Length: 174
Image (cartoon, rainbow, N blue to C red; front, side):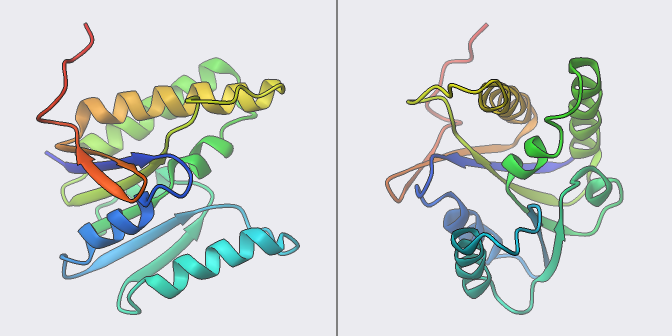
């Protein structure tokens, strides 16, 4: 059985830093950075650089846009940052393809033997996108977070630089 720790939160809430703190207690960590390469996006590259500078050099790094192949085979402790990259990679999928992809992800996560720390963005708490793709992203990310929460051993949310463990203070929605 897997040991999944889900850390979610809004933009600049501290979710990545908290996940990195949790991972820092582990001996060998593989950091999976889920993002497309954006060589011409200066702000994005500054954000990536900040993440790189925070990470210990002893951690193995995998930069990819496709999460599923990374968790098919146990690689030891993983830190996945972040689910938004997984969702972006599936936005062109039709609903049935999306559901198959999500189910595959959940199956592989459930059967992974080592600890996995997953960072996920919370969206939809404020602005609603005027674009269909923005709403699709928000909906799919929300579904993905909800399903991963069900199979996680620990669920955290970060708000304003504070982390709250949700597992002991919630009521499961029937």
